[in-house]
Image (cartoon, rainbow, N blue to C red):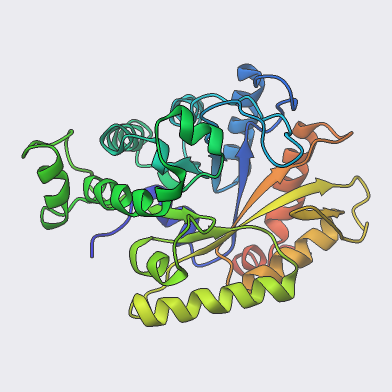
Length: 325
């Protein structure tokens, strides 16, 4: 098995809990992101020691849900991440998630290979199956077949993102014996985001990690247990990371207790540190934080998390015994 690229190793194989941010970080709900602001925030996140910057894939601005809520207007995700890559040096860049059944797999594979190369091996490819009927109709794809389409295209992209000649056979077959570009020096990590309409056993067997949503701690512990069981059954017990998202409303009062919000927490930093330490103990490798829109400036929250939360995590203090909690 080849080693993984820089992004996967520092974010998902770090041997400790790492934190990432969903981008754009400071975008208003109904407007495109301010590129200058987002570049500055990406640079600060890089300097403060965050592990990764993530972004979503919104192919079409079709309303979502039964309430027909408006969809966030976002740039094309891999181009967006390339822009952030140019503004940063160390931090990993990932999709959470690109909608695989709506993307031509050879185009997606070449874009992923290019972004990984141009960023200095800082790319992680998170993939989902999509759920908006309007998008599937617009792209000429059958939403009823998305699970099968996901599996088929996954295998082709997986082949293209591997450095091993034997694993690249599917790519050569699909591309009439040709290569898309030079093979990567190390494997580019591919993560299933959500269920992607696949069984957990399939994900454990084929993916390099699983990203799922925030749940209350008891329920999430159950999901972690299911993931670890699936890894024992289908991956020979290979350690593959469990990743969770967190909608975060960070309060100004450091000692404010945590209370649940949809898909996350409203909390002060002290309770957040304790919560993240419990997640690490439970087996979570990475937490992808989505800063909720609220009265506080996003820059202030990024700074507080970087200066007051990251250094206080259990794994961080274990590495720096002189640091006071």
